[in-house]
View (cartoon, rainbow, N blue to C red):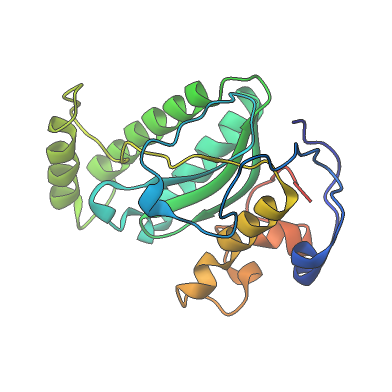
Length: 222
């Protein structure tokens, strides 16, 4: 699947109701079941089977630690995503950064999505630890202790572990599923009571789709 084209300036209602795809070609639904269900309880074992496929994924901080309540760490994520988009052929279709997890819709034009995921998580972990260690962080001692604790519990016995191991990848193979995931991502801050409207949340692609502007550029899927 190749994503291309300029951003259509469409209203949020049109994002959910429009009947035609403008910038993405999707394969038939196949055997995909329960398209409207998030079903994280069944997510264990999900894998990126098509390295060029379009995937909805969730990156969760270990222990559901609220790391992203500070702008510093949210900005590290944004810079890392932009780097991967510019230098690693990463297609960023949608995203939202919440207090302890991130939802994205990603694709690799180079066909190396798993490698890009690994690099993204590894580099962001390095930058998080640097920021916690050297910036003014009132929780520094506790955060470093927790990330060390989770790191020692890994097979690699890493010094620090920030991200949980499972990305819960779900391949998007139909327009209906795509719209469900876009809506889920953009409504996250509304459901959490952080904003009234999806486009009011800065660290999300909702404003890109609704107003054509956002804190970072994205690759429009609709």
